[in-house]
Length: 83
Image (cartoon, rainbow, N blue to C red; front, top):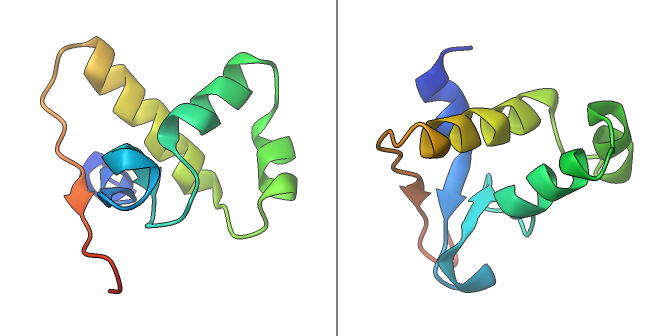
């Protein structure tokens, strides 16, 4: 999966978590995934805890973080509530 395809999984909805980047319009913020990984959770643990979550979602979070740290431009997709 290309970087662009991975990053397309990161979305923003102003009505969810105040517009923080989230995964595929769901109520799971990128920062929460990164926080769980930083706390020692494995990708497998996250996939068990969130049955809808896919390995590519976690990869997208890591790619998003790497780009932000590298001061690269990252533009998540914006969602409209109810779509």
